[in-house]
Image (cartoon, rainbow, N blue to C red; front, top):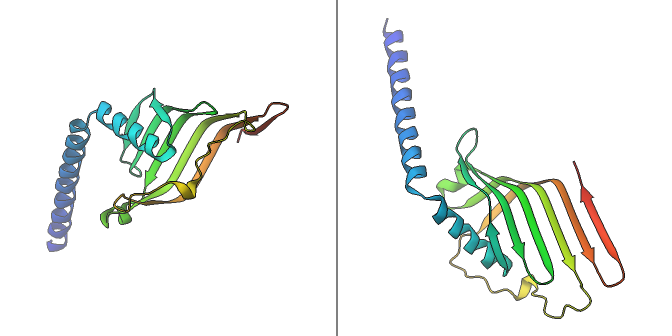
Length: 167
């Protein structure tokens, strides 16, 4: 009989914990507006790429089975290149998040289209080693990067090279 009472107590504690977690997640997602998240992500993309970026689609939060963020219809452009992504999904690891580190379990890119134009006349290329990074910024790591339906086209004055991935 005491064994059944112990199982009941554990079950009740699990149900209460699940309800509290659900309410907290609901409050978290309702208090953060999509416009604020879009503005933040656009700002971060512009900082990372040094180019103008725009999110034309939706931003949705995922909590089950893994926490993550899904972004649709991303467009990054410059005079010499354009980059478009149909769907971008970031899956987070929970344990490093507790320690204040962003570690993405997976980044899934579906529908990537990149067009790089007129490389020979381009003179000002920003190299990654010349970009100054703020040491106070949060750094993150990626465990797995997945690309489906991708195309990269490089166009020079006399030739065009296209790389495709339709897996």
